[in-house]
Length: 146
Image (cartoon, rainbow, N blue to C red; front, side, top):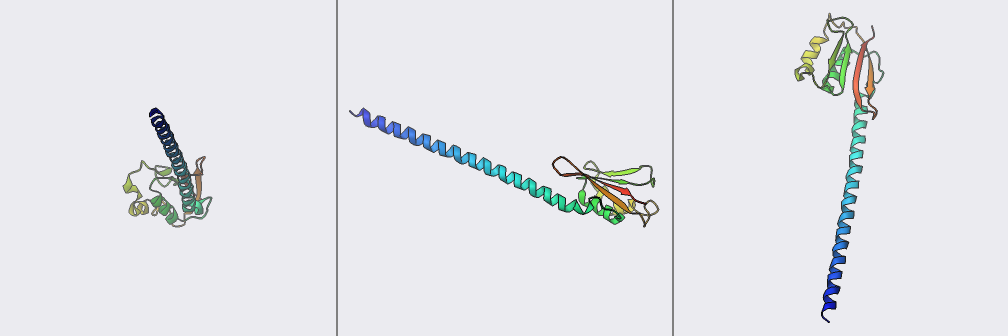
């Protein structure tokens, strides 16, 4: 006769354990779903911030060499920046990417590169922004207009 109460207690304990495990599993699923939503929002915020940072350059014309220098310095190689030099050096296109030596992004070095006679004071540039399939800016191209 004592067997019934211990069997009942064992089944109640098993059902309680199953209930607790189910709740833990559900809470884990909710936490994963919440983390995925937060990750998607963070990515969207990053894309919007990047768009705001470079939107003023999208098909902009009449940009001064100072605008190009500022963009190169701020990018730090990501996104890649290329500048058409129009034959002012042995290299027809200057490129700054993530593989470029960090010293090349300094204001002093950039100002030296863009100084006369290589780049005249009257030089103006047209900016073209290249994006990947997700809309992230991967490359900024500056072409001489004059």
